[in-house]
Amino acid sequence: MTALSNLYAVIDANPNWTGKTYIKTVPENIGADKTFIIVRDSTQQLLDFASNSFQTMQFDMQVQIFYSQESDDDFDQVEMELIRYLQSNGYFIENVRGRIQDPDTFQDYQTIILGKQERN
Picture 1: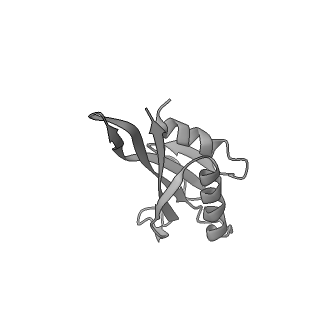
Picture 2: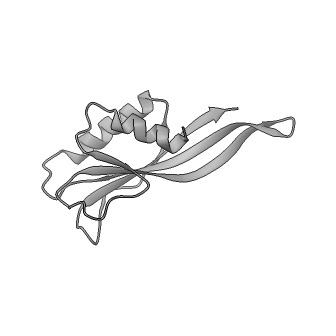
């Protein structure tokens, strides 16, 4: 399984998450009345060099939460719970970009950049 597939599986298995989770792309017919997460690759870094070879690969990925226009969820609470859940599953948070509004759907969304390291 790829690092991105693992992240998808972890989020999709979260018992507190009530929306749909997608990997890389979102279906065109999804409405702004649905809350969902999309996970995407970001960058990869080679780390911990020894004997002319890397020992660790860091996978950086992004998680975007798109909130339903009809949502009455406390967005801060949803994000903090998701971040704690991800951390408890071995991910580290690199950046939380700040909630903005999608210009096409007018949904608020948050982007969280996270990483996971795997040793060779």
